[in-house]
Length: 304
Image 1 (cartoon, one colour):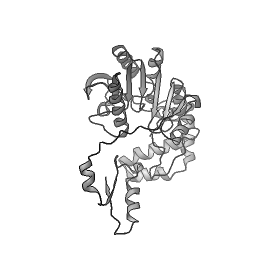
Image 2 (cartoon, rainbow, N blue to C red):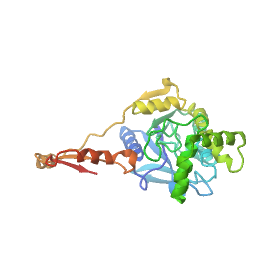
Image 3 (cartoon, rainbow, N blue to C red):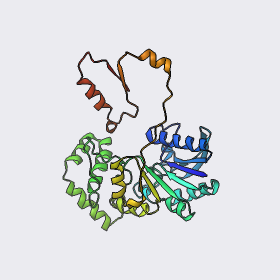
Image 4 (cartoon, one colour):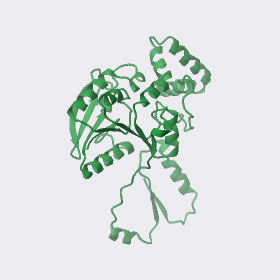
C-alpha cells in the first residue's frame, strides 16, 4: 500500500510531538512493507510570496516540502482555501500515487488540498493531535492559561485573542488593553466584517467565518482518529459525524531495557521524566509544583 502522510511541519528543523508521531507512523508503515511519503510545510518560508515544492529524505523516507504556504495576506482564509497549495498538492499526488492520505495536522498547509484528494478518489484519514479544527490557535486556551470553550457565534473571542497576541508582540500595554476590553465589542466587529468583508475587515471576516469553512471541509474526511475523549468531542463540534470518529489512543513503542543500567539504578531515587516542549500548556510546571509538596527526604528526582 502507498501511504501519503501530511503534517504541518517536520524534521529535522521541527521535532515536537506531532512530528515525532508522524515519523514513528511512517517508520512503522515502512517496516510493515508499505511505501510511505510525507508532505509538509516549511515554516521558515511560509510567508514567501511564491509557492514552491522541494523534495528530500528523512530516515530514508521521501519528504515533499511546500514553501510559500501562507504567502497570501489573508492568513485565516488560507486555513481552508489556497489555490497555490492545492495545485502543488495535485503535483504530489501525480508523483506519488497514494492509496491513502493520512493527515496528522492541517496547520500551515490548510484544508484546501482535501478537494484534490477526494477528486482523485483517495480515502482521507485524519489524526487529531490538538484542537486546530475548532481553534485557529490550536490549543483552546486564553493567554493566561484559562480554558476557552470555543468560538462564539461570530468568533469575537478569537478576534480578541488573536488581536491581543499580535499587539502584545509590538506593545505590551496595547496587548493588555485589548485583553480587558468587553468581548462583546469584538463580537460586533466580527459580525460587521462578515457583512462588509473588504479592506482591513477581510481578514477579520475570514477569522469570523473560519468555523463554517472548516465544517464544510470536514465533509471530505472519511475517518478521524481521536486519542482522547476531549479531542473526540471537539471533532464532533467541528462538524464530523460520530460515525466517522474512531477512538484510537496513541501507540507507545516498547522501551529498550538496559538490564545492567536498571540494576545499577535499583534502590536509588524515583526518577520522573518529562518529555516535551516547555510551553505552559504542556504542564512541566505542574510536575515541579507537585514535587515541591513532597517531604524533603523523599527520594524523588525530575528529569526534564
